[in-house]
Length: 136
Ligand code: CMP
Image (tube, rainbow, N blue to C red; front, side, top):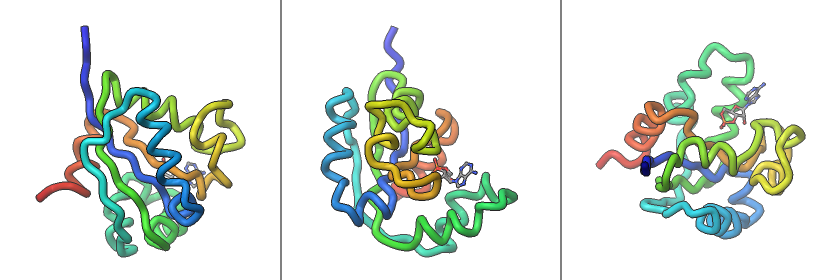
């Protein structure tokens, strides 16, 4: 049975800055994702703090929020069968050093912070994250 889902993807500042957004979008499309919505924006640090609120107590929270708001990002709604898990597989491990060959983070990631992409980690969070960026 099919299980069409939507998930939120962010191409982070390190990748946008290196003009990798189109290549990364091609990787999504070649792996069967449809890009339903897309926008290039720069967010305020306070917005990044809201977006990453689940990480509020982590030691890396401040740097993470400063980083996500440091330059333009591309946010997208991706859709396909089992999109949440499929996107996490295609992104690879959070730390590019641990990511498998063929994944986005292995190919483009620079460090655990500059890991080129973000993807929702559950269907529930995907709904929240899509609303966060695309609520009219
Ligand atoms: P992302 O998938 O965007 O979700 C939270 C981000 O925190 C993660 O990618 C990493 O870029 C960043 N981060 C920085 N340090 C850590 C860490 N020690 N563990 C997990 N994530 C980290």
